Image 1 (cartoon, helix red, strand yellow):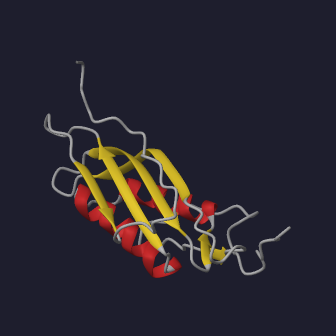
Image 2 (image 1 turned 30 degrees about the vertical axis):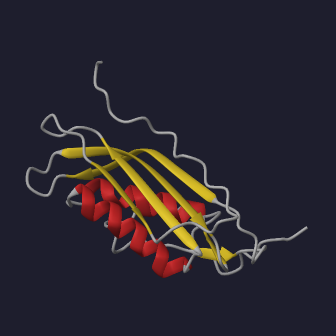
Image 3 (image 1 turned 60 degrees about the horizontal axis):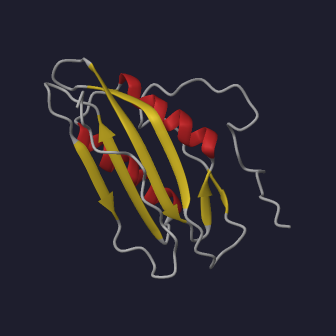
Length: 154
């Protein structure tokens, strides 16, 4: 059985304050114990929040991140703190979504990554943002993200 090396982590197992901003957040990684295995790792954040950069009003999204690790896994507590750091950060939906994806790519250098950000309506219009690094490897199992399109009341 592979044991993950957690010796370099600074946040896991310790009280960690919420970062003041996404730039101040520390994302940590641990070695992937199964290099070459095309495992799809999924993180779902159904209560993601950020601020509208124009009005300062809160925006809400259901975010799903899928990635296939190469050598690294993102440490989940650091990812949670990073995502929560957006709650007082003003940025458009598209910027939040792509910033998250590109930060993870820079940290992990995954085989493949996809993000789906299903934003709740602002001004009566939901904005969904989807991005991926390219086609997933042919042998990888990548299920649908399972978030239905916004239908409002009907």
